[in-house]
Image (tube, rainbow, N blue to C red; front, side):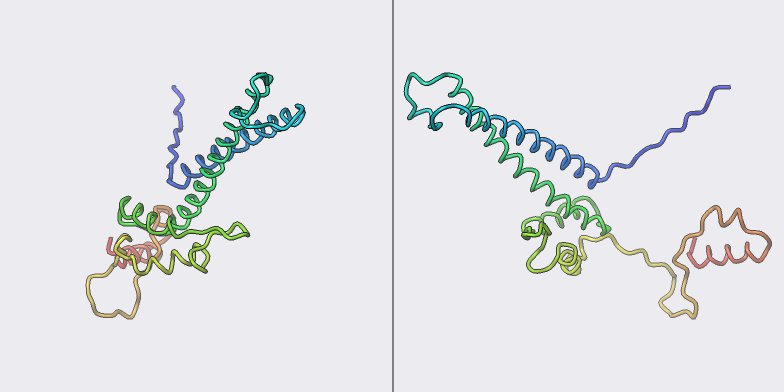
Length: 198
């Protein structure tokens, strides 16, 4: 008899992708920083002050010119990587906060992201803020004005009149139905299902 294989599918979220990108950028920045430090050490061991290529004499050692060019290139790429990593970290923090809301669709989520992304600042402590509020508090406060972006809240019940017993908000699971022993427990599960309008 052939063995059954269990396959699991893993849901990839925006936050997971953002985290993977942030980790890759951080690794890239660290790698470039190591190369940059190595070139600085090599250049500091050479005699004389390194000068821009245009002002250096014609008889300069070619190895020095190559090292200086590499240093300039690595410095530039290191700064670009640091900038990208900082932006990715900021975007990840905002995505994490926005992940606590249920948006109507992806366009609504992207719109909310764009609304908040331009206002985020980082404090000296490394915390993200909007204005004088922590990021999560500021987003929650502002989302009250952006309710059109949020998914509608499911409302149960068929009438507008008030009832003495509020419908249960917890779901009935298959285990509760299977585990019901006796007619009383089955009636309780049936009542719960009826209150949920299933």
